[in-house]
Length: 423
Image 1: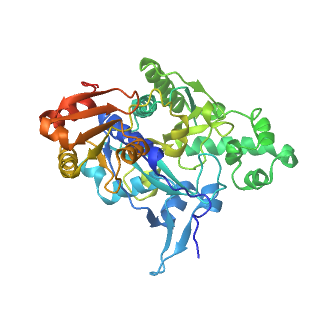
Image 2 (image 1 turned 45 degrees about the vertical axis):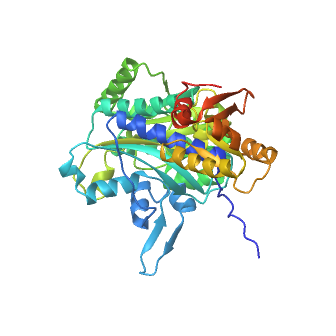
Image 3 (image 1 turned 45 degrees about the horizontal axis):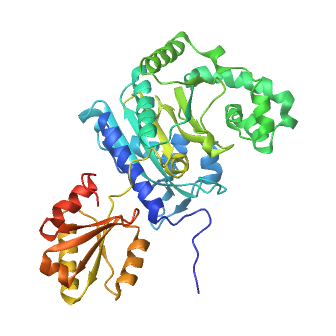
């Protein structure tokens, strides 16, 4: 019997795995620069954590969440997003009392049973940032800036920032009634899902991706009509802070998020490389979520970016090198083989990527293995060269080669990794 991976899952290896690793490394460096600490939360949580956070009428809860009853008869779910788990950790670990303002970033797999498509998998990966314990508009701008700096340094330029303010839950209640009045006469023109949303939560229609519904949405009433002076002032402060930081953005009064916990600021990053479904990252403010989980009322703001989708947007030309060049040991003779193994071992101890094919016999077969390994350089060592205390260093890309002193091999190889030596 042979097994195949489940639909909507993906095996990652080679260059793709290296790219994922590099993206995560850049995230750790950038977000720590902004004062965020890494937080790892469990993949498995109580189901109610997500139903309360995301809203029972959202597509994630109704259609996409992987959930089951475990052996202790507890209803559990595999996390479909990261914010709910971060908020639970914030309250459970008393970060509100010990840290005041808590700034975290996270990364890892998420799970949604949605229709697989380019960059959207049933097991996918997200990198996210959360600021908990602040209602300041500058925190919104700082969060957006952290995201744009990360995208720039990851080599994903060419994106667009879209911005909106959804107001508070109270402000949205009147807006929902206005939306119901607007959409009801057009019920038959809406998709089946939106026909159901009209009765349960007309606000969700604004997030529909069906083009016929999108056309109707573009003429719908705007949330701006229902915002209080406080919400409008908050939005103005966010915009001014983004202007001061030199971040370009486009205001979109019809943009909403697919989850119910957002209040006031929401934003989305789109990228042309992703096609029609062009959302790369998204986030916003969620000032009532901590309170709804039983915590002390406090503001919060954050975002998440899909790693698979980000990888589709990365420009290889602007991405920092994924790996150091790497060296492949090619030996001729028994003494050279023994000495080569010792040198490879020493290189690895000194932080240098070094490879060797123990089964290859001839120099030709070893060079083929070197090319296949995608190493940057070959170290060629024979019995005669050991006597002469030298080795040959060959650039596998250009074909250039030269003799080097054997006693300096560690220093030379380490220097090449920093761009200080050539053949």
